Length: 227
Image (spheres, rainbow, N blue to C red):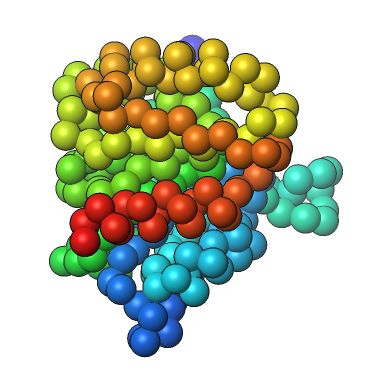
């Protein structure tokens, strides 16, 4: 019988940024995690509005790159699959912790984390497992994705997390029942140790895509709360 083994290696991780002009920069950093089959280079362009509003936008890229169709053509990336999933979670949490420490060691200004689609589970695991802890974030946005069920194993880890904002498109084919999914999310968040009183649902007219007006409104509201 074959015996499985693992060993740790160093590898190169890609990330992209949008940097506001100094006259508009307010010091806030928005981390955005892409969905399945996307590349950070193109995904980050959906957040130019936030950059223009003074945010530094940082988009790490999933380590698993592949051809979207066949063996040639367009390339996408993902964060993990079910194969060796715990190793992949450990790796991407460590990679993004290292990135955050490098580019923003003092964590000054408003710290916002947004995950889209597959990136939602990635973002919430990072918030829960990252070495700075959930309390190091000021805003969490779960856009068009689900709360990963394995968060419930992290007993109490999310009780100091900020409010979680769930964003859903009314025509999203992956979310057939937004209200029903919200109730499921409430249960999942509560089981993970999060405060259900701090869970908010935001719906927009549209499908499975980033909705810039909703993101702009949410981030502006959060910054105003600090002011």
